[in-house]
Amino acid sequence: QVQLVESGGGSVQAGGSLRLSCAVSGYTVSITRSCMGWFRQAPGKEREGVARIDSGNIVTLYADSVKGRFTISQDNAKITVYLQMNSLKPEDTAMYYCAARPTMCHDWYGLTPSWFDYWGQGTQVTVSS
Image (cartoon, rainbow, N blue to C red; front, top):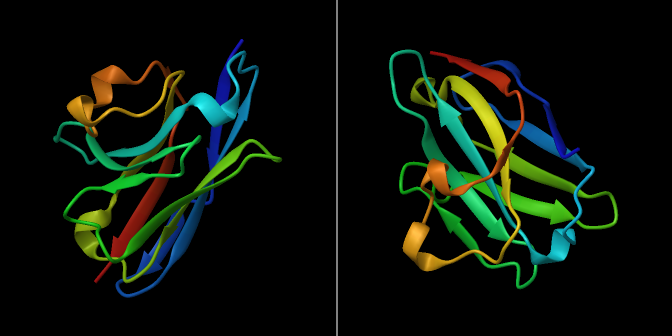
């Protein structure tokens, strides 16, 4: 059974940093042949893509709203995906989710949540002004 467990959320002031982690287990497909993503959902809003990484070729994609501030990375040995978030803004406040798709990343689905198959339970990030 595939499990994705997020951690690292919390409350910070604007301008601060957080590092989210997503530990993956039970994955039958090699982590190096997967598309791993981070998504977020604020109250009353739709879930949106934040960043993704192709675990094979390490190509990344970011939402315009986080470019230059967030960095997605992975540790294949630990089967963990990270999201380093710097220069946080109040509008970054949301529940953050890790997700996986057991194929390479493809341009045609970008950061669309519905194309990702496995999801974690989320970790809350709150940024105060």
